[in-house]
Length: 161
Image (tube, rainbow, N blue to C red; front, side, top):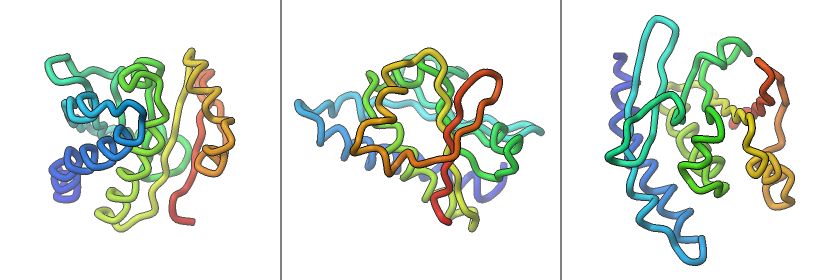
């Protein structure tokens, strides 16, 4: 595992705690227990690396991907953040926490890796999350190029343009 990846993995739980905690505080009523109950894991192979998140005590699997750079390579990007499917959204009870959280993570990773970061959202059958994309207060955040890969709509946005 590279030095940058080790630093990022060490930093990720703290980044998640801060941004998830802040978001949960903004919800009425606050859902603090959900924000602090995450298990983080990382996997790496010749194709790339992925970060995973799940509730503590639950197995971490591909339904809980929060960071993955393989899809980005197909689009010609180096650093990509993505949500795998509706199971990931369900992890946070359908709230719009994903965009908030991933923006923080992307910026940290870009700073550590000295490169521009890109984040990607993929949605399959999660219509609630798709509807949230068009809410007025999230339009600016989700202003993005849209791709279709393997039948899924993929939203891509550079953080540093």
